[in-house]
Image 1 (cartoon, rainbow, N blue to C red):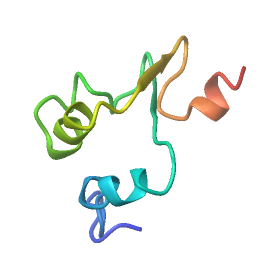
Image 2 (image 1 turned 60 degrees about the vertical axis):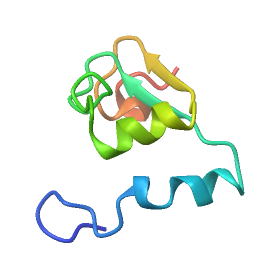
Image 3 (image 1 turned 180 degrees about the vertical axis):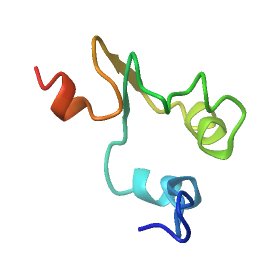
Length: 72
């Protein structure tokens, strides 16, 4: 999954348009997520999300691992 310690081998922004042609895409972040659009402002992924009008949702009282921190 990762090329080095924190860099993805194939970042999602490089194929997100292809993915969208096959299925609906949305992004979910926890309100306390270390990786969110505010932090990622003006990065390739945030630019793709904005350019493609991809829905972004924030889950209250959750950090990066939403499914674990606030599964409801």
